[in-house]
Image (tube, rainbow, N blue to C red):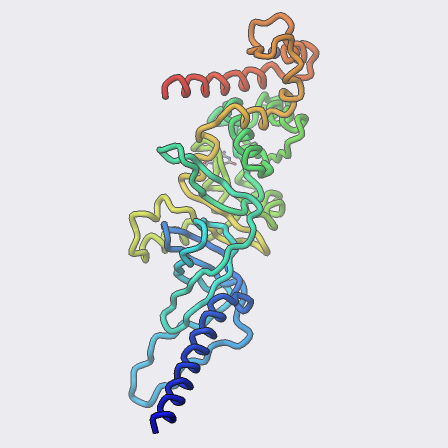
Length: 353
Ligand code: GDP
Ligand code: ZN
């Protein structure tokens, strides 16, 4: 009798151990997990859009006559799920591609893995720590316009930030209907950037931005530029429900106070996506450092190290390779000016700290 009981217990224990082992295995095995895209994040909680569906969809429990329908959210392509992340994962941001599991009984999901990132936009927080903002942006559209008058140093700043994030830039001169004539200085400015090797485009709202729309179709884009240049007009034309979608989120979210600053991804066209937030629109105005600046002025950094003095400031020195390059029309005086201004800015900021 005693022996039998002992054996039973052992069987039970074995079964329990096996079951625990199996759950752990299932926990670790993410091969059946779904593909997803983080479309919004509020701190630790995220919204994930389903990019795949399970091979075998979970079966909705049967409901007897007269009983209320229990909650059930089918896993559909494109559906958006509020998710938590496994604690071992790094901080996820809007634009991240993830592996995740959905629970139709609760409508909640759990993110189990993060896919490698093509790019990561970061900004320093107020303690000078690097904070991730958005992942996988493939193109930054820098918008300028005849009005407000473009500030070339600001454009250069954006280009520095793009180079630093290793994301290509597209410089768009919008409101071309306001250009005066063919030799308008704003056109000249754009041509200068084109000859430096940057991609440029001319647009105007009354032409529907169709060329831009086509260009952006396979990209994950962010728009930056001074207020008033036409970013919202452009975004509304390319991503028709952008404004609307943002509103829906702030109405429904229990975390409403975060929604105005949280970064949102909205898909458009065949395979395009827009990543937008007030913070992203300030991209480029964030803190810089010396190395980053050199990256953003490739035509100038080509001459760095060729000056007579190793610590040349490229201002008053007689034997300066960069100033010589300006004389020889290899570097634009205006670009050197911007470069020096940005360097000064960092030096001042460092002296303040
Ligand atoms: P944002 O601040 O960069 O988002 O700029 P908005 O999209 O709010 O545009 C600022 C103003 O410029 C609005 O009054 C728009 O109607 C106007 N605007 C936008 N695109 C064009 C354009 O191509 N031509 C002209 N003339 N005005 C435009
Ligand atoms: Zn020099």
